[in-house]
Image 1 (cartoon, helix red, strand yellow):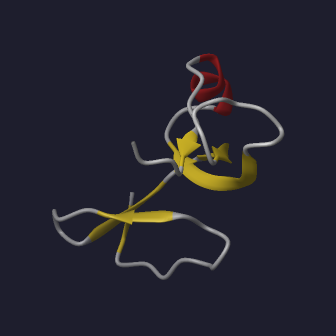
Image 2: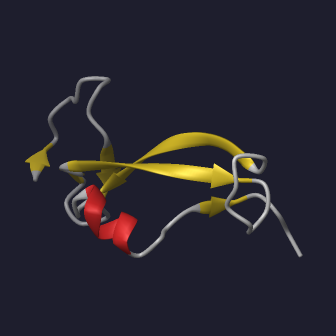
Length: 71
């Protein structure tokens, strides 16, 4: 936790309500984004960088993806 310190653009941060401190997420999860729930190359859109407090393998093993389809 870094109190009231400016961050560089390449650092990902979250604001906390307590004492206006900034917490930096130590890991990045490259999350795949799909159009539909069926995970194929036809429905793949892109990868998004999501800040995380866990290593990427944590999310990969759980099959975490983002979906754009609303049903």
